[in-house]
Image (cartoon, rainbow, N blue to C red; front, side, top):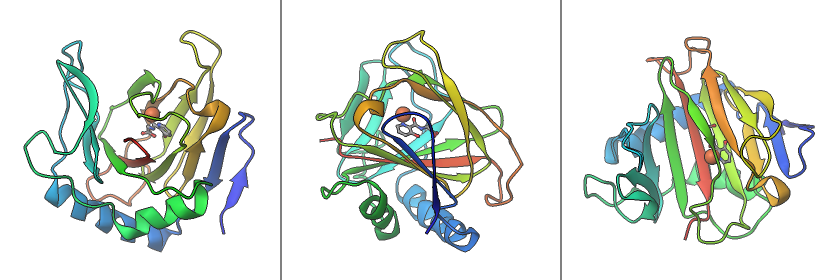
Length: 203
Ligand code: MD6
Ligand code: FE
């Protein structure tokens, strides 16, 4: 079992190396099965900017964005249903989330060279008391977390391939984002870059 690191943030739990290198390689193949069924997309924000991160989802609900807003919906923007959440991903939720309800959304984020994600709150879910669990694969990423209001003090930690992070309780609504990735530092993805999976109870 992986070691759980002290993050200094109440409700934020980090396990370094939850997935062994072999399990990470298998997880990449699992993610590729999702992407083959539901292609990665660069969404447009309500403000009209195209996001750098390429996204798709698995599960009954998927997170999307366009000029009309952010939301969860049952179909990919191209029209197909989202594929089911693969069992190995659900297994990590069962072991690490601390809750018995199953997730209904697995958001897949892909970061290519130079891509980052601005500070945001995860607040589009119907019930914000369920945790959000993230799995990192590929290049390391600098994760920044602040408070529940914009503009407060922040702290940063590196998320590396195989790490599992859970935001729950008092950490659930904290602002967070990815400042940068170390592109090419990992050889896990043949094309380089980083994949992050976030599991949620969305509906
Ligand atoms: C990322 N993660 O790691 C972006 N959200 O690429 C998130 O936005 C995130 O890691 C909620 C909970 C955990 C996360
Ligand atoms: Fe988030």
